Image 1 (cartoon, rainbow, N blue to C red):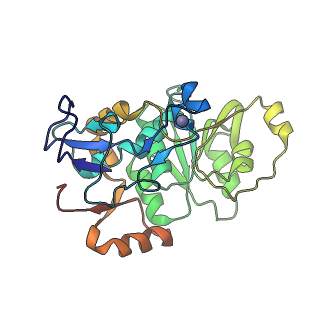
Image 2 (cartoon, rainbow, N blue to C red; image 1 turned 120 degrees about the vertical axis):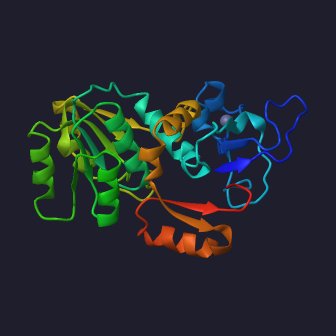
Length: 280
Ligand SMILES: [Zn+2]
């Protein structure tokens, strides 16, 4: 979420009234087992803006200033609003040994998959291949840097993906749905890595552990952001034209129900923003 500082506090806060800021929306407790080990993205007692505290659909909310980051001049609030999801994607990227010119496979072309595809392309990877059935999302994937998009619901989709990867698989596979481990294992290269990002509590996946062993595959779970907001904001400011395309719908707060329906229908091409008058 993006907002404008209304009342800075305490007096020595580094923020001033009128500053445009993004909010880190998960406030760790700093006392639990995970926090004490420095794993603040895995806090057991998180306070989540928008879930356990007021969030981005409140016109005014209180945020501890350690969870605010300034939006640089010239960066549109609508693009800056991608800082949180991009910071989460960058938490996967910090674990990746990027190699320019190596293929990347992204399973799922929702906003998170699109952000990952864009970062992969900007990092020099290629071809960047996205698997996504929704035609609007497929078009967006190409617009943010994907080299190929394959509809996974078409017959022969797996063969097509395999063929685009030259028959060797992808050294990096990103599962943006959180339910595609067996597909990922099929398409990952020997010695490759799978990053499971999507959170799907209902997903049950059948796979052969031997596939992990035989190919010496690394499987990583990636949960939200961890110290990655400053980099996310710099990336957005450097490439607003690329990332700005991911925002497909801006809906005023008064029409919030329309935003919810669009989200729940799964038909939006990209990120849905809810806007309000205070932030331009
Ligand atoms: Zn904690």
